Length: 114
Image (cartoon, rainbow, N blue to C red; front, top):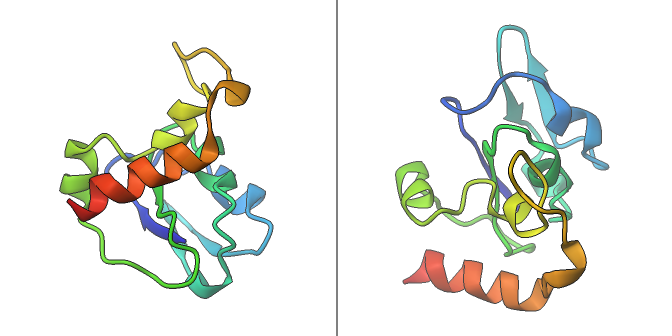
């Protein structure tokens, strides 16, 4: 479930708003989008994959929101980590087929919980 839009990283492009299939975000004039309908999130990671600033964190837990701390997510390398895992973004090699989604999710959960 989407848990965080980093105010410091967001470049206000609103791509997350545009690609979200369930209309989770609201645009904000002159600011980062806000998570307006978190319970509508399907944990599809589309927003995280399309975010060019690695400013989003989608937790692998789909059924309930989990508390997150932005500084900790940065320290753990988790902001935008799914985008990186599939190879999207400058300096990355596209390779979604090389990523085992189950292993990725288990590693992401392990990092957050420990």
